[in-house]
Image (cartoon, rainbow, N blue to C red; front, side, top):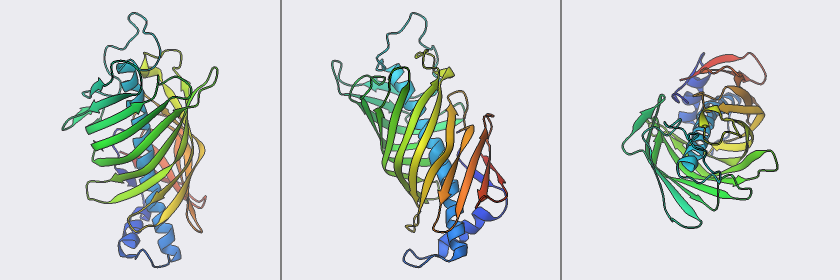
Length: 284
């Protein structure tokens, strides 16, 4: 997520804003307004997805930095420079036993690898992060990713089995607000599998994660859409963007699909309505 401004070719997103600004919450959606709202929220969901995967990367690096993965470091294996956190200061409370609280403080703002983070993230971990059954609860204190304020509670539950590292990630009362004060709410459960880099726990640069699951997203007018991961979303720590996979945003009668591509690390994706012509979008 090098940046999180969504540029969509054509007039779909402009229409979404025009319809949403004049609709009343208690009025029925016209067919045109439904399409516009679904398209608008598809763009919002792309922002949510990138923020969620950025949160995932921050959480994983903070757990390594704080010595909370449950892995014993090998001499020389711990990375000398951060992959994700940049100027974030990581502190861990409770010197003995669990639970522990990880605090990540980005202060007034620090830009690293094209992403500016500010504010504070708190994560309460019940046990070593890589231990099956452990939980990690993330909350935010005036936290922003680039210009987007992030709120809500993200809970990771380790669902790992022999040979597979995985987590269930639940978002409750999620909220994202842009620089203009426009916000959208979201909640749901995603399933995150660590697909590459599992055997090098102190080298975060080679980590790759696969994400599936469902979500709901609601705009300021109370219009809600359901979101389903159609093809697993692939996010590598070495890439600023989700590079592969697709999601479906379902309205009452119409749906929008966002396709993040086939694995190339770039800002390009496509958006299509009801399976029609794919319109290029740029995630920067």
